[in-house]
Amino acid sequence: MEVTLVRLVPASLRARLALLFGAGTLVVLLVALSLLYVALDRQLAGAVDADLAGRGDDLMASVRAHDLTVVTGDPMAQLYDRDGTPIATSVSIAGRVLLTPAQAREVRGVTATSRTLPLGAAGRPLRVRMLSQPVGRTGQVLTVALPSAAVEKAGDRQLIVLAVATPLLIAALAGLGWLLLRAALRPVDVLTREAAAISTLDSDRRLPVVRGDDEIARLAATLDGMLARLSVAFSRERAFVDDASHELRSPIAVLRGEIDLALGAVDDPDEVRESLLAAQGQVIRLGRLAEDLLLLARERAGVLVVHSVPVDLTDLAIAETTLLESVTGLSFDVAGGPVVVEADADRLRQVLTNLAVNSAAAGAAAVRITITADQQWARVEWADDGPGFPPALLAAAFERFVRGDPARSGASGAGLGLSIVRAVVAAHGGSAQLSNGGPLGGAVVTVQLPLG
Image (cartoon, rainbow, N blue to C red; front, side, top):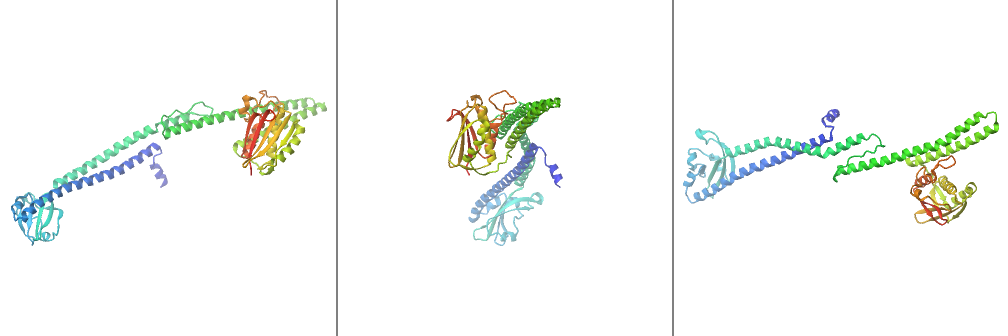
């Protein structure tokens, strides 16, 4: 049953809308034309009854004045005595009656009826409309009549006209609706074809502009904007893959070279040991780079897990910078009172480590860490005395593989430190900002974390 129903419903949206429009038009037209027919029929019947009422009033006045000649001169009228016997009849129906004695005696007020009586030529049946009413308190009844065959034929003709016109109107309106739907949905067809022609996100093709400010125009603009954003995202991801490949290629080449040296000097233990130590360093570098890339990938996918526990930022900064001093050669000054946040201590240590590595690589010698808090946020300001961020890279320093020195040597970093800082801070619901100047005149990184 469901399969049959699905087959009966058109697959095309245009066809479904046209079918719905045609069905709605059919219902509306049938209701409207039915009401029109009823109104016209009542108007014709009302006109006949009004004519009969006017004639009846004129005859009633004459009968009350005891002038029965007006009844005989009327086209179709009859006056009955109280027992139903005709006492005055129109010449046109002489010898025939409009009401039987029993029907005449039953008249108590103004009564309008339609009947078929043998009043035609040679006694043929004739459809008439009659209006009967009592004549005062005399017990007499006056009936006036009018042949209604012409009126009823007019009503039948109206019904035939409406019956013929209804399908034509429905067909015309359905065709007009189909043309309107076709014109309205033509931009959708164009958008569909163009979207199908855009085979990859790398394409510079865009959807055609749909003029106007209707729903389809807004849809086209939205889809075109989405394609533009996807193209930008695709370009960034491709650049990320290219940069990651470049970063991986150098340590892999060095690692291969050291292994070749070790294999070529198997008789020299010192040379083999030196090559293996160099290869081990490159393996460590590869592992660190892989971990950094995995962290950024998880952050982009929204699955970077942080294990939040109460952490005092000042205590954490003092403890971590004590270890970093011997590794980086930087001198640290931590200022601020106790500020407790719900955060992942290991991830925050990674943030401080990356910032320290960046400052040391930039040539800084001193770092001042200032920790403050307000009612909603905790702020960690990292300021060094280095040269600061290059102005051209200040807006893009958080991007992946962005470095001040364009050379990519084996000793240089991968340019992921600040990207990881932003990813970790974002995973905690915070934000990070970069600037130059600050208390020491160098680079300033401001990290903001939510309290509680």
